[in-house]
Image 1: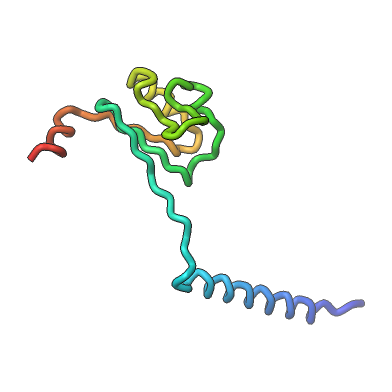
Image 2: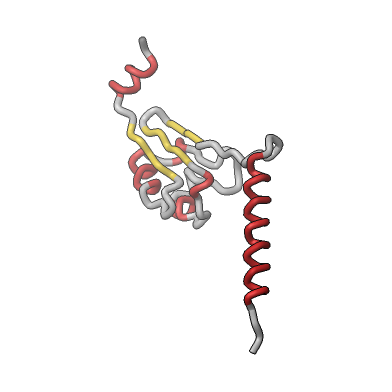
Length: 115
């Protein structure tokens, strides 16, 4: 029979060392975590928010409403391409939740921008 205790011991030590390296690396001042920002679009009636980190790139948005969600141009969301109702309906079908929408109530809009 072979004794694997030394093997297990060294594997455990290697894993501990790697964990320390990873923790040390992420704490260094030169280590920058990729920052991504939400992309916000509005047509005055609705606010569409796109969170790139949540997107699974199924292209459900573009396949369902290609006049608004264009994968070949930047900015890729053009809210003038369809009615607000159609846009909101398509955004709600986003499988990952990367797209979200908020209907703008005229009273809220005025309250936020007029003092």
